[in-house]
Image (spheres, rainbow, N blue to C red):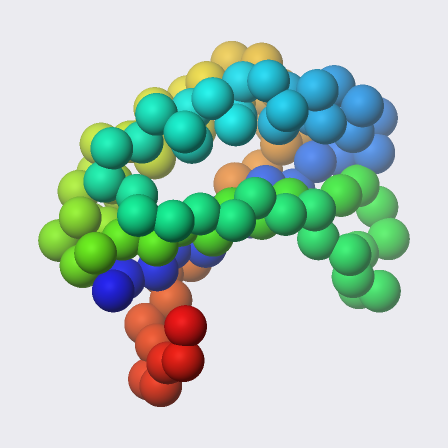
Length: 104
């Protein structure tokens, strides 16, 4: 199992549009990802974020090779689509999670 966490940070003035985008566009993109076994799309609540909003996409792959392939092929496509719609007002932060212990 291999996990990728992608955080999308949206500026305050685009939250409503981002919410609509998540429900319609982003969700459809995620559902069409062939190599993703499981995913969780979440709104992040944090005392540390005072401006804007974070949305997190947690992707679970069968192995590290599938995650690497995703990072090389699918993530750039997602980034390009988000950039086309939101420019610099949505920032994307991918983080590779490498579990040391797991009970999933």
